[in-house]
Length: 234
Image 1 (tube, helix red, strand yellow):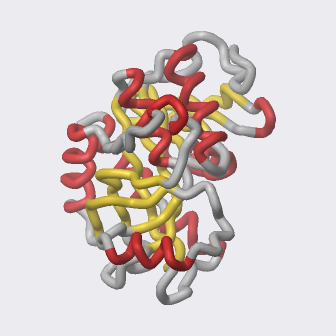
Image 2 (spheres, rainbow, N blue to C red; image 1 turned 90 degrees about the vertical axis):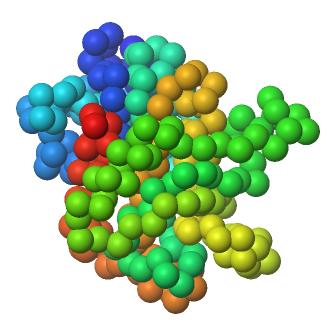
């Protein structure tokens, strides 16, 4: 048990899927895990442990933004022994070839700043996904009839962003989509020698203004969860 995770030792699996929304954690556990058990509800940040194809899996909400993700990832790794952490979440598309419901596999995660930035001082650390997870996720995605994109994303801690010039530069330099957590997850995984990946479903698009209705989001996220699970145990 830690300050933010009320689970007991042994309740958390070595493989953890991390949606931002705790209710998405509940939905994913109920729909993809066998005998899912609630192991954490501290501060309403729900976490469940069950099994998938015989493998133990925890699905733990991380909250919104890199500071919140950093708290949960640190405790999962340091106090509960998590070794594979996969973010499953939504993102905003930035390139014209990226469509609603497509899946982005984040190879790198650019950011203006993160909770880890201060320890690097003048260094611009480049957070990247674990290659074995990324490779397995690409193979899992290719077996499905969904649009899949592999490349760089942008992790922002500002949801209501008023930096149009910054978005223009992200698009100019090929960034596929924007979300709020992956850069810190990749940095922590590098620090603690763990595996990390972000598998993201495009729920809206910064260029076109399109967005998935709320009732269609969960149905569209099933592929993302299955890709993450298959990649974790490839």
